[in-house]
Image (tube, each protein chain N blue to C red):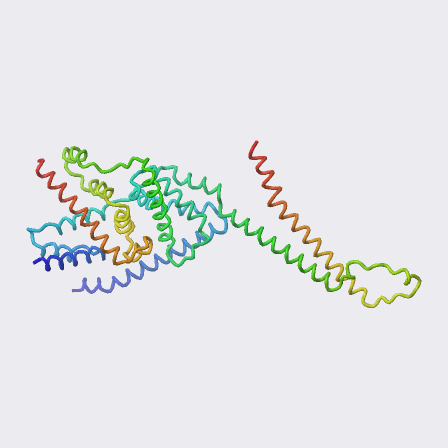
Length: 167
Length: 208
């Protein structure tokens, strides 16, 4: 008898978990017998739960969430990542400039030789050397410009924004 | 005979229609999420409006305090917004958001448990009896109050299953429980509610 009841209860549970309604559920409750109405209460509870509605928060809820988003936006992490990329670019440029300089140090500054004054100078290859020197100087200029940008974003702007907000 | 045949042929069509609709809704949501990630904050408003009721109900079932539930829900949406970049899209956005809400509410609940400063509005049987019998038993309201008597895990299970129509697998994924355990716990919670209802109706009958 108890086994049969357990089986019926298991079946009821299966029906409810599968969200079936109608005939199989009614038949099962009928089968369980009128003496034991526990199943009927479970079915009733299930039916009541299905009719329940969700509750809503206060009317200002969405606005409150949106205000908090203004304070800590996704953009902040994007900005952070942008700065890290910029810093990486500066480092790469500095390393490139350093290696180019190390390969041929005479490219950057050529010392003047007094003994050569008045002699014919062999200008072969000077054009190429000047071009490389120009590139290194260009790289240094770009590096300096990017470093200034990082300084502006990380130090200057936050400093002035804070001062403006403090007023 | 003809009508039953029609029904058999219509059911697969209905399922196909449902799955197509679901795909459409999901792709619209994906587009919305992409807009939010690219910096369009206003698009997040749509998501808040869409999911706030269920998230709030879930938090309320766990915390049993409207003010605290609203705070936890708000916190959950902000957390979701901040970590939206980490959402990999393997699960549904709703499941991901519900997991955040569930975990946030549970941590609020634990914090409160440690401090014990909040007053939990619990269902009071003796007080309820008077109101119930003056106008007959409002079963729907009674069940709602009885859910508040359940512990936070059982109340969450009931909320996920009945209010959001989630499957046992989905509930297990959100609550980090095995589907079998979800099944057992859900059955126990349902039985507990049924016993409460039976007792209340019995009390009502004796009062009358």
